[in-house]
Image 1 (cartoon, rainbow, N blue to C red):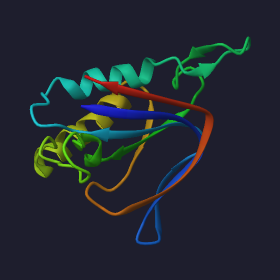
Image 2 (cartoon, rainbow, N blue to C red):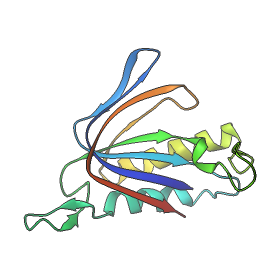
Image 3 (cartoon, rainbow, N blue to C red):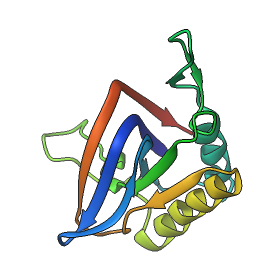
Length: 145
C-alpha cells in the first residue's frame, strides 16, 4: 500500500457534479493498493494515519495527530500511485491490484480508521472524482508499507 498524505483545510470530493464527501480540516489521503498487499495492511495503514504527528502544537512544532486536533480523513482511492514510470513516458499500472481486491482493502482501511476513532469520509472507488483541496502548510508525506 502506498499513501500520499496531505494536511488540509476544507476539502471536497465530487462525482459527476454531485458533492459526495467533504471535510472541514484534517488529512486528504490518496491510497494506492498494489499487487501483493496483504489483509493485515489496512490495519497497519490506519494505525499510522491516525497517529501521524503532522499538526502543530501550541509551540508551532508538528507534534499532534489528526485525532489530537479533532480533524477528519478524506480517504481517496488512487490506483495511479502504483504507476511505474521507469520505462518510457507512459506509466504502467501492472503493479496496481485488481479492482475487486483493491476496493476491499481500501474499504477495510476506512473501517480500521473509523474503529480507531477517526471520522472518515471516502470517495467513490473507480469513479472519475473531482477534488477541491486546500493544502495546509503545505505538508505532504509519502508513506508505503
